[in-house]
Amino acid sequence: MAIYDPKSRKAEEFINDGEIRATLAYAEENKRNVELIDQILEKARPHKTETGVACSGLTHREALVLLACDIPEKVEEIYKIAEEIKLAFYGNRIVMFAPLYLSNYCVNGCVYCPYHHQNKHICRKKLTQEEVRQEVIALQDMGHKRLAIEAGEDPVNNPIEYILECIDTIYSIKHKNGAIRRVNVNIAATTVENYRKLKEAGIGTYILFQETYHKQSYLELHPTGPKHDYDYHTEAMDRAMDGGIDDVGLGVLFGLELYKYEFAGLIMHAEHLEAVHGVGPHTISVPRIKRADDIDPDVFDNSIPDDEFEKIIACIRLAVPYTGMIISTRESEEVRGRALKRGISQISGASRTSVGGYTEEERPHDSEQFDVSDQRTLDEVVRWLMEMGHIPSFCTACYREGRTGDRFMSLCKTGQIINCCHPNALMTLTEYLVDYASEETQKVGFALIERELDKITNEKVRGIAAKNIADIRSSNRRDFRF
Image 1 (cartoon, rainbow, N blue to C red):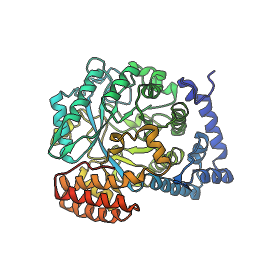
Image 2: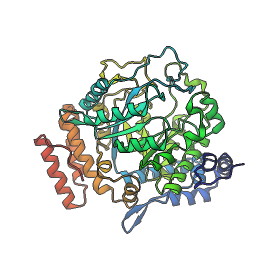
Image 3: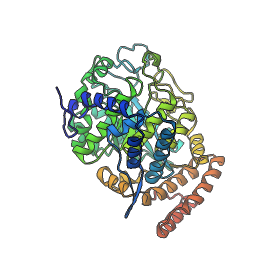
Image 4: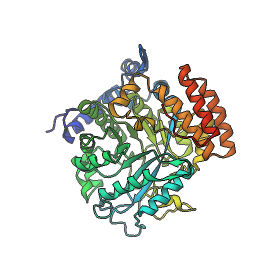
């Protein structure tokens, strides 16, 4: 029987079923233990240091006690601390991105995904490099600067060489004032050699969703194809880091298995990366299973109500305070708005989850990976964020200045990252407003920027940022960054 060891490189040891079950029992036993809950909340709370603000984070057992807690006033305290942590390290900035689907050819048999190879009526498509170019121009013309590329697993149609060629194409396109400055990659688990190639291609974050940490469920949900190998999939982030990729992104597909089990596995995976590589995940995503071609989410009986979903987000923020948290257009405007207060720091905007969808005037549905709940334009999403007091950020400076992996985390953990991120967010928002925004959005945005400039405490930084913003507004100069 496998023994729990967060420093092990074996999946069954760092995501240990026995440890998760013991943690579930511990959380159930202590979910109304007010004294213990108060101790955990106090540990999670941000505290001042000589260099700024710091957080201790929580172990998977501590975090699961909070997730299990059903005392209303304690749940409200969880939410309050989650918002404090988010503001302490990410401020009121919300990073913007869009997914770009390259190919939906796939050899796997995943029962929850319409790309599964048994689905014979979905429209199969793979973008040519010219089609990639046209998709990227469409995204640039919206104002996007950061993409997450997606592709099914198919060694014939989507080999690593195809992915690398697409990345090169994306970075090469400069249309009007547009440019994609960061390409994150969400493709199937692969080899150290291939991860090294992705690193050399200049990717930002490598993202891979575990789908479920429950091994037996995983094997049943992935009955055929290379993804059936639970250990190979679960150990992928270690290989990615071995290949030199500093920033990796975790996630589970909530609704496939009991959510408390998944939550424990997710936090344990983050602890494992910290223990082995000295740096935890750069991002954690929180997708929920949604309706799609050939997929009925009602078939899966582990769906999560919105209030419990918010609680999951808040507890992740307390457990892994320095990690970026992502919510996609799978969720509605209402759910995404509430999630922003619980710890989310990145959202997608104007997403299309079909291959070639951005060049189509009408949203295509015949090759979508999932239904998009939030179908607003990027301009509408940006204005909505600003009206709530958030700064939509198109910044990619840390990645291009080498502030990745442990270098990013060390800046984040001392609170010093705000001296770069806040002015960079304002400068990239100015670019968006000048080049792409509607008149109404410009009016809201420029007023917000004036207010936010006054919040920069470093006089020199504030002066440089103000000058750069003025230059962006009066000329074609772009891409200023700290």
